[in-house]
Image 1 (cartoon, rainbow, N blue to C red):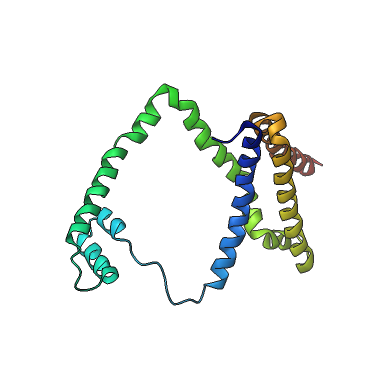
Image 2: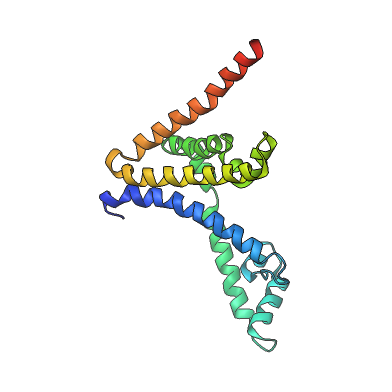
Length: 195
């Protein structure tokens, strides 16, 4: 558990490093797009899908053709079965018990409304979006840079103030700003249609 004075910054740091991770992932995708290799199938995932023979072949490929992998394969099968037993009914309990309902609603609603803002589309397709609405090529690229800079600046600002005001206050302020940003253009659009 983090110290209370650092907890907010660490929470906001999550979003910062998530954005950094997206950029890194895109760079890795770009750098390895033409590589002829890929991820090999894991024995545990093959056992989960009922393909024990393929799992055995994968183990032999890693351990060597003369290796005795049957004991390891049995251990993997036991671990997969134990994982299945521990997961049975977990979602049903979460969905039906009243004490979990507020958490479930928030866990579904927050990401859903976040996606509905369109910010992810703008983050990934900013130059295309800006060109579509009439910006030139250079202006579209600069729009993407400005969008990223605003995102980064907002993350840094929230990191600095989250411990002072608390996560709940920032969550509410951000939610109100998102509602305004979604509703205001609707009224502007309706006024444009009328007159």
